[in-house]
Length: 158
Image (cartoon, rainbow, N blue to C red):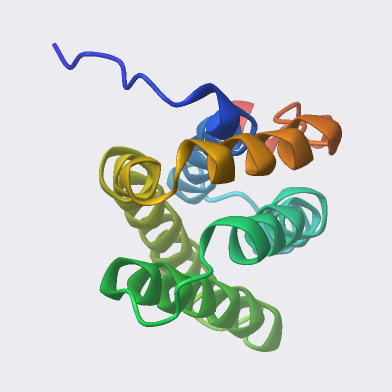
């Protein structure tokens, strides 16, 4: 059994949101398995983007991914772009290969989260000074970081 990751308290608000992103992946995969109407899943993808991903990415990019020369930061930023491109592709090609695109998005988000939590965040905790982490924490704890989801069409339960 894996030991839970002990996160620096200053990064907990952003880290907590990663649980919501893993649930997002699970819901997409369940919707695909149940062959739910792709329009319903696309609506959820867009809702989740607007209510979670967009703010989460902006927060990480503004506060945590500040060293553009760092290879781990470059990877995280690149993965953000790949995820956004896949969401755009889902919206452009909503009728074609929808289930394949939903699974690809779930794989991208899942892989990205599983990179950030056990690898990137511990690395950043070591890279930032305690003062820098405290300043980041003040901003994060004062900002809205809800991992709560209130999407009404629970297609993944069907």
